[in-house]
Structure formats: structure tokens, C-alpha cells
Image (cartoon, rainbow, N blue to C red):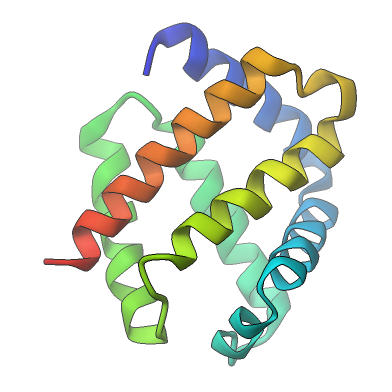
Length: 135
């Protein structure tokens, strides 16, 4: 990713984090609306899951562009997700829910360059996780 794209992702994420709980709730609402079957994968407290998701995105956004810090935690998360029953196609569904939720939360601030930067960022995350899940 180009530095300007990373900056757009990081700046927009900084606007999300103060309302992280609302963001995650909306994300999961969107995710389960897109694919209700995914809800069966969540066996633990959704509050705990929400904290884990925010933490993962916080780290991914912070270390974007720094492969040595960015890749290992995502690869480890991918291994855990496989154990939970996540399938390769589920990563695409998560991406759709993420972009939809960002658009809803950021409203006009989610302009086309920001949307494209997030798509690129999520594709990087998804590719690392998909690759690690096949190892």
C-alpha cells in the first residue's frame, strides 16, 4: 500500500475508535445480516469477541506497512479462525461487512479515496489470513 493510503486508513480509524463499541456492534449486525449462518461460529461472549476484534483492527491499522509487525499477529489469528470453523469465503463476507460499517459510521468522511484505501487494506489483511490458514 502507498503511504497516502495507509494514512487515510489510519486517520479514518482514529475517528472510529472513540466509539469502538458502537462500531463493533454495528459490524456484527451487518455481518449477520449478510450471512446469518456465521452467527453460529460465535460460541463465546460477544462482548469479549468485540474487544478482540477492536484490538485486532487497532493493531492491524497501527502496523500497516510494517510487515514484520503486521503479518505475524494476523497469521496467528487466521490459525485460530480455522479452528473455529471459518471458511475461506467468510473472509470476503467480513470484508463486505467492514466496508459497509465504515461507510455507515464515517458517513461523508468515507469518500471514494478512503473507501478504496480500506478495500486495499482489508485485502492485505485477508490475503495474509487466507495464506496462513492454508499452511
